[in-house]
Structure formats: structure tokens, C-alpha cells
Length: 572
Image 1 (cartoon, helix red, strand yellow):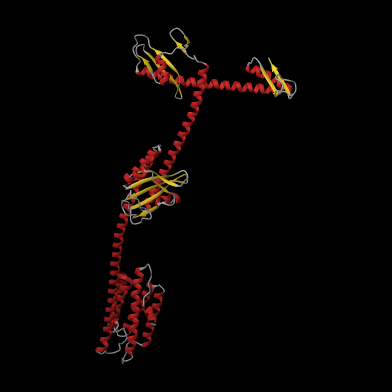
Image 2 (image 1 turned 60 degrees about the horizontal axis):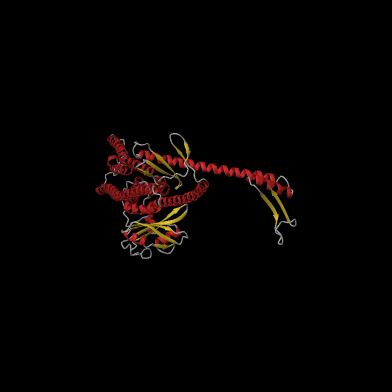
């Protein structure tokens, strides 16, 4: 029951509208105060011999206030305020006119209306009702002086004059106290809001400082990541690349230890390939490796392809316990992914207990992806180089064999040019020519001003260019030697091209001859005719003196061929 009474007396609250809520609280208090005054007046008037108010009038006023309370709870605060003040002011004016004018007990209650108007409607409402009251009270005073108002109720006793004044004074004091409380509440809320704003400002400053620090750190990470990525992509030798990357990461980020692991071909072990710390170098020297999926963060990341962080690993021995790295307090392992597959792990360790955050891991993962791409490119480059070298060796071997066959067939292949003519060189080999042929280097004879330059085709010496300057021309200069070497290289290219062309021509002629002979042989389906055509065409194509084509096998008891089971075709 008490809760229901408390809920009935409590003013409505309008969330998000502080001004409306405050006005509703004031009007609610005023209405209940006036209802209480009406009830007290009604009780008092029962014992007065000549009451100035009638009980029906007090009842109407009380019901009107109750209606305003209902309107107030409907959210019509401004309308309820205007209606209340208008009714109250009209009521006072009517009482003053009909019950004694300026001598009426309610005449001084106009001050209460002005005070209430100021509380509910603000300064403009208070001024409006004050001006209206001054005009109306002046009119009442003039009308009363002219004898135009009804006769009063007679002479009132001091007690009858005291209680209305006391009632209005108490009402005014109560309203002012209510206004003061409302003002104090507003000031208290303002102070609370100011304190909250100050707290929020301080928190915002801390947040901004933290965000600025994080942003600066992340920007630094990104700059370092870009620099390391550029350094990684500029190197194609795998071991050098990984060593440079590990050292750069430790140097730029200030890590205690940085290591790069690569998975072996079966994918069973993560093998340490590069490290930046002294302990890491010791592990690298003894061939350190970790089993995939079983040993520490590196083993986990190499199997699952997900980054992992271990903070304060000195207390968490499940993740890290390496005597070569005793100062490690934090560790982060990130997968090296290339073409959707994990090829290794980037492992970084710090001496700080909480050195890595998820934001740091995101930046380091970007770096790890770029490192993996660089490693994959270096591997592909090495594979391409190995394939090219194998092809060069294979082709060089074929070329060397071809030149060997050519030189075996033509042992005295060479020419000499002098001022008169160009003639075959024969079997002439000077000492400097032999030196250049056997050593593959430039050989010179200072006495005769002779210079021998080896002719190389795919690093194989196939001949020599021997030049001799006229007498009195001096020794060979460096520019002349360089020119001779260039001419030797160009001659080697031209000779190789000529040999390839000859080989192509011979192959084409051989294929053409085979095609012609095969075509003539297939012109008939008779066995003897085929044999006769084959033996004749093959002999002519190969320019042989004699060719025999024989089918069958020799008899066991005869040396000479017989007719039985054999067919022999001979072409002279």
C-alpha cells in the first residue's frame, strides 16, 4: 500500500528531457501542496462562524487540481502549468472582487501566483502574470474607492486576518524552498555531470594516448615490415636471404631471438635454417630441428598453420624450455605460407614478459607472408638455374661430342691469312698456339709479337686464333688483346651456328633420302619387287659398291645358299 501511495505522490519522469522532468516535479509538488491546503482549509472552515470560502468552491478547486495531476502524468506539462496558473489567478481575482477587494484575505495571494509562474514558466511567465496582476489589482482598488464593489463580510477579527496571511507566507516559503531544492538538485547534477565529463575527458586522454602509442608502434611495425620485405625480395640466394631476414627482424624490432624454420620434403620436421641470436647460431650449427605437431610453438604452427603466442614463457614450460635461450619471456610463432601451403615458421622471442599482442601478430603475419613469398621465389629461381645448368651441360656435351666428331673427320681444319692470300694452315702449331689450346687462356710470345687466343664453344676449346704483328709495331696492348678476344668469341658463335646449320642440313638430307627410298619401296606389294627395289634404292642412295638383301636363314649342312627356305637379291 505504501508503494502505491509513494507511486501516486511521485512526479513523472521523462527520459532524455531534463527541463520537462524538472518542471513536472515542481508542478506535481505544487498541486499536492494546494490540495493539502484545500483540505486543511475545508477542515478549518467547519469551525469558523463566518467562513469566506464555501465548501463547494473548495471542492471544485481540489478536483481541478486532481485533473491537472492526471494531465501532468499524460505528459502535458506546459498545458497543465498554464491551466493551473490561469485557474488559480482567476479564482483569486474573483474572491478579491466579491469578498472585500483590497481588504480580502486572498488579495495578497497574487504574490504566490507570480512566484509559481516563475517556477513553472520561467522568467517570461512570471513577468506576464506580474503585469496582469498589477493591472487587475489597480482596477480592484479604484473600483473599491468608487464604491463599485459589493460590501464586504464585515469587520474581521485579528485571528481571521492572521491565518490567511500566515497561510500565504507559508505557501510562498514552501514554494521558494521547493525552488531552492530544485536549484540545488540541478547544481548537484551539474557537478556530477562535470565530474563525469572530467572523468571521461581524462579517460579519453588516456585512450587517445594509448591509441596514439599503438598507432605509432603499428606504423613503425609497418615501415619496418616494408623495409624488410624489400630487402628479402632483392636477394635470390636462399641461405643469404634467410640470414639477412632473421638479422634484420631482430635488429629492427629489437627482438631477443629470431629464427626461420623450413619444413623438410616429407613434412615431418621443421629444420632451423637461420637465426639471429648466439643461442640460435649454436642450434643452427648442430642442425637443430623440431618434429611437426609435437614440439613447442613451432611444432604446433608448422602443423596447423595458425599463429600462436606464449606470454611469460619462463613460467609456462609447456611452450618453451630451451637452455640456449634462457632469457626468453615471450614468444610468437607465425606460419610461412606460400601458394596456400605452410613451408616453414617464423619464430620471434623477446625478453619482455608481455611483448606481443594480437595487433603485433597481425603485422608480423604480413611480414611472414612476404618472407614466405621471397623464400618461394628464391627456391624457384634456384630450380630454374639448376634446370638451365643441366640443359647447358647436356647441350654442351652434345655440342662437344659433335665438335669432336667434326675435328676427328677433318683433322687439318684451318686457314692462314697473310698479305697475299688465304690458304689452308695444314698441321702448323706454334708453342703459343699449343699453350692456348691446352690451357684455354691467352698466350703470347714477346719476342715474335705473336698472340694466341683460344676459340671456345660452351667452355670447350675447339681451336686457336694466332696473330702476329709486323716487325717494329711493338707488343700487344690491352685494348688489342680485348679486341682479339671479342673477335674470338664472335668467331666461336659463328662456327657453332655453321656447325648446327650443317647438322640440320645433313639431317634434312638424310630424312629426305629415307622418305624417297621408303616411298619407292612401297610402290608395289609384291615381295620380290619390294626386295629388288629396296636393294637398288639403298645402294644408290648410299653410293655403295655392292649391297645384298637376303631373307631367311642359312641351312645347317650347307655353306652356300640354296633355294630351300631362302630368297636372295643381290645388286651390283
